[in-house]
Length: 146
Picture 1 (cartoon, helix red, strand yellow):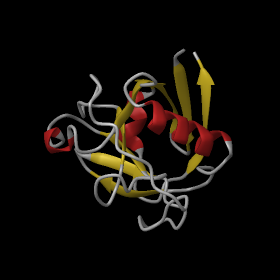
Picture 2 (cartoon, helix red, strand yellow):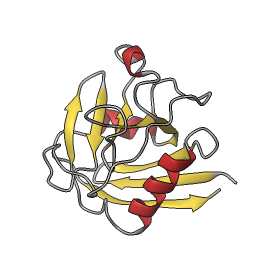
Picture 3 (cartoon, helix red, strand yellow):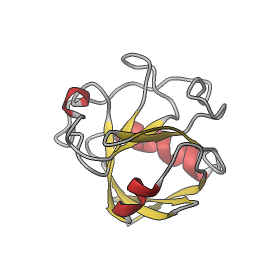
């Protein structure tokens, strides 16, 4: 069964296909956090031009999470960081939780392949990635069946 994340931000809405087969645990965690309202009104605390936009820290500065860690899922076929890819941020293997990033492009992301779990890709609203600035809010994220 395929799932879509609807990521509503101050700058507009993005829709992303989630990689339920390649990263089932990561997708399940993201869905649980999203649909419980965890991401509502959190900010994008890290925005690096031509690299990533990152959010999901409850503290708003990149040092927080949900209170637990999830395992990296790095063996699936979609572990390639390209424009629009959603991936888990972490402080080392198997330390991710709620922080995620979306890639601006492939230019500076090859080193992330099979080191950070790719769990989705933006299919609508790709231009929103370029509009996001540090401090912009995630209004809400909802995961639905496609």
